[in-house]
Image (tube, rainbow, N blue to C red):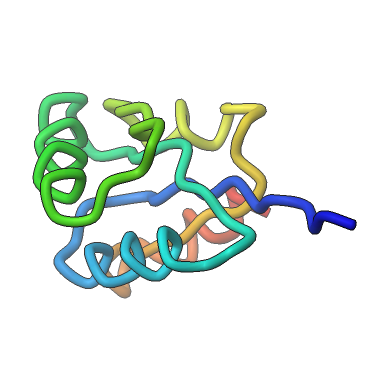
Length: 95
């Protein structure tokens, strides 16, 4: 019997998100499907850097807005490493 895979998204590219990238990769029942930042280039740069250290077989998609990631039907859970002043708004939106 196989367990379901949780498909994660990361809302932001904070340094702490790099640790959770690796944690998601090392989990036996998770994958990372998307990363969002204020620009798609910033999200892609984060993905490229993290992929070079701890790679997913299928690299996550890069989004240039948090709303795009929250609208992705292939994301089941969202990690929100945003600054404290922004976090509540985006956690509520993610719910």
